[in-house]
Length: 265
Image (cartoon, rainbow, N blue to C red; front, side, top):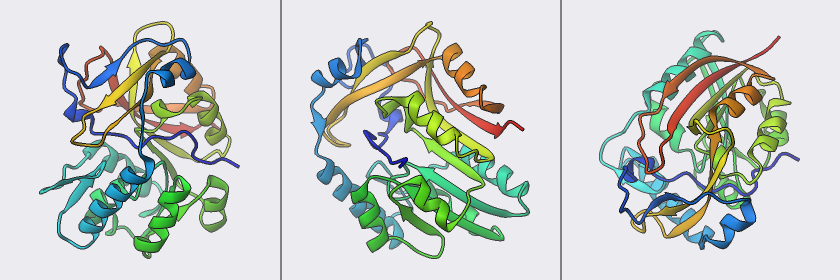
């Protein structure tokens, strides 16, 4: 079963601007995941999920237009590259769009772009998440377009996706290449990789990320990927159709990139 394991919900990158004296951000260069975990305090999973649910329900009920990582905003901060990529996939598919959002929380990207997406001729947005997210999503948030699943296989029983979305997920997985390999084997025609932290070094770097308490109190391991190694791995399975800058600056010299992949024939 391809389930979402060891996934940590993405935090607000734009709250962590570059500052060498900052207490929060990404730190260290650890030999392995276990060593990084020893320097992490983890997080209260239920507390975070309940906070995300509360914020998402306020968005659904029209009190706020947008939330990200449980933080509510008075206006939507559109991620135009993601929206453009989704619309590109829909345009190639006769105006219809079936999205598999792996690690999509309670639908942040769906609610963010709902006004545009629901103008399409057909839309389904399937989220694969941790069991507690799926339980709450099904109970409080599912509608005609938004659905929640415990694993990729179960989601495939309902609809075959046109695009797989991985937004800020991969760097928080213990074995990211193993997960990507499993997902690539489903041979989904298009993949959007969003917020991939890339570095020029010849090997990946494992850090510990400390989250500002105003978002939630947590710290946990986080990967930075060798640019050459990551591209070589991806290109074994997919063509890189486009690469774009996500526009974030953080305390570790890196390039936070997004990319659109198309399945090789």
